[in-house]
Length: 284
Image (cartoon, rainbow, N blue to C red; front, side, top):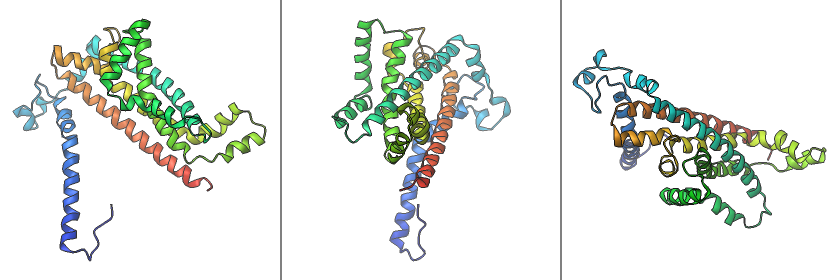
């Protein structure tokens, strides 16, 4: 954001600082629940509020007991295992399908391009409760409800639009003369894809895959409809914990999820900057 010029008048100075105060207030409003949740996950007592000892910063008021409870609880360990299994499988499928779709949609001669793009992005537009209900009735008729396969396919459908968007954005600056040059040198389409196209669009592919993984790892509505007891994911287990047995262990799990999300966002930002550098080095 540009600095305030020295010749700015009183009104300009007022709006300059008022705008920053407004942005800071909105930012604080958004992250306040996270700021409160993280220290509460280290509470030595089974409470969801700050104890007088915590406010006094006494060492005995803080503990890792709720993080240890995650490791000692079979249900939490099972749900984490399920989340990673479903998330990794759904990410692989969504990344593969989304990349192929983006490559086809990036072609200028693609028929019904707008219609196909709208259909691919519909899981992002249609309310999730409607998508979950439709998937439940459809998968029930196929015997896929309350199975790992059905949950993976459902999360694949939810994650594919993110891959399509990121890869399509990356392909918008792709120089197709490189494909023609590769073909003229005798490379097969498969070799051209793996040696020319994929290395250049890899930041977009990886970013889309990370978005797909986060979508799968944090999704709870579809899991409520499709997951049985054996297929419970971490968000589904958190939902059950809030309804059945309120424990600060939920805060510890939520803190871990926040840390994972921050790590993934930092990775996506690094990939975005790398993609910008590659575009800056590419010939016009």
